Amino acid sequence: MTTVAARPPAPQAARRKRTSSGGGIGRYILIRFALIFPTIFILVSMVFWLMRATGDPITAALGGRLGPDQLAERIHAAGYDRPILVQYVEYLGNVFTGNFGTTISTNRPVTEVLLTYGVATAELVFYSLVVAFIVGIPLGLVAAYWRDKAPDAFLRVFAILCYATPVFFSALLFKLVFSVWLKVLPVAGRASTGSELQMQFLPGKTGIYTIDALQTGNPQILLDVVSHAVLPALALGLLTAGVFLRLVRTNVIGTLGADYVDSGRSRGVSEYRLVTKHAYRPALIPIITVIGLQIALLLSGAVLTETVFEWKGLGFQLAQFLTARDFVAVQGIVALLAVIVALSNFVVDIIAAVIDPRVRY
Image (cartoon, rainbow, N blue to C red):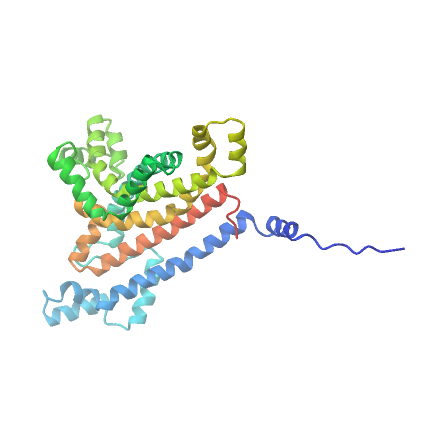
């Protein structure tokens, strides 16, 4: 009797078996979650050592305003005369318990500063992402539809101008045109003084002016808040809109060459329908994967945008603390922004993995 040796499983079947048994989205999420901690550790450590490269924060902020004895007393009271490694270990312990220290210039807990002004930056970033989606994705579809024609060439130049123009320059240009020349939009601030006073005494105040304006029930206050947000959101959002436009254009053009699109085209489906109904959805996956990086770009651009428009968020406060050489506050704000970027990338990676099954380890 002849015995037939069992064939080894095909490579693709074995790979599918390994993916279904030990891989998949659960394993991917666990790996990405585990990577958050070393990422945050490295970022927070870099912030500490870069801030201490100029010496202790007390000397940096008050070195020219206090006598030697007073300065030494303040340094000793803050513990900055201890070995740097001891300070580093204590700093890590405080950060991971949510204690970022006390500001030198205003003597406020850094955590209080982060909570007070962080919501303003979050609101600005949200508005900017809305602008980026509204401008970048439809124009990317238009550029792909009119590929290599005049509208496409114009939109490609527009995209380059969007992400190549310094955000402070576009912010100043918008202020000049819409606030100074046309006088149709406010020049600075998050809301007018009257609106801020009415929102100040709300019982459920959130600090997010759009929500607080809705709580007042006064449409004039809501209009005032939104009008103040238009120019900062445009200046910061167009920076990302240019990236989205190029990504959507490139990926829609690539998708239009897929077999299922050719099949639809052979059945007489119009090119407009192919672009808007069949090709654009797969093209959105790369947009989702780069949102985490764009949030980091928006947070960095928020420093200049908030300074130009006096939008009192973390970016505006960071500029103020840098001017005052308050490195304790700067250290806390930058550490928080680093944590936000790490967490944003984690969330975006999970969303991309849910949408696109090919995103796996």
